[in-house]
Length: 266
Ligand SMILES: Nc1ncnc2c1ncn2[C@@H]1O[C@H](COP(=O)(O)OP(=O)(O)OP(=O)(O)O)[C@@H](O)[C@H]1O
Ligand SMILES: Cc1ncc(CO)c(N)n1
Figure (cartoon, rainbow, N blue to C red):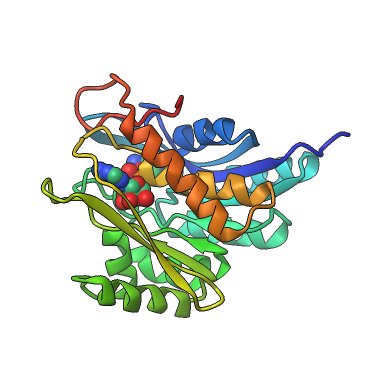
């Protein structure tokens, strides 16, 4: 029947090298066999060496993208990625509240995988915290974003739990804090999941010492979004998405010279 196939939405930045952002989200949606639609917030020009320019969409264009999808599709779950600045955040919040686009996975993109790449105007953390995070069914900060948003250093497991609770206190129902992976000697990467029912668990995966991991966070949050759209529980959605990221890092794709992509074809 028309409009019954699971449809999802990524509200994100286009990254023209194909590794991260909206391009990674859409490749992930294909893998999980959901139909991917998109609201482009910003176009980024770059490659595996770094980001070199960006062009932010106008708020009226973003409004039109939302309206056109609402007029025609049956969106079951959504995710946000790079939002770039305050007016984009405000516009996205306004539109998400206007339409019924299902549960929201918020990937609070502040830094790229190359830690020198800033993807959000530093003056907008407050807005992200006050307006977008309270809408999150699942919030997926990486280790650095969690520290910035929770306003604390994370040195051990207990700190990570404290930070996770602070992020839930900002209004996110469920939180996954992605563990650090900057030590070439480490054997595992340990993510923390805090659920809305006050339970928590750790997801420990093998650590792969590779530079080819651009787009891991986008892929994880897109995978969670896809699985939620198909009716999976938050716990299963997170576990299935994490398993896909593991496979996609483990089977490298020989594309790009520096911070290359993961392999969405696995
Ligand atoms: N080198 C690695 N080896 C194994 N797992 C990794 C590695 N790097 C990241 N991960 C896993 O990938 C997922 C995404 O985490 P990550 O911290 O890379 O997100 P991110 O910084 O938001 O990514 P990006 O900005 O590139 O999209 C997490 O589950 C994390 O544990
Ligand atoms: C456009 C865009 N969104 C998100 C990320 C985070 O991986 C990125 N590098 N680029």
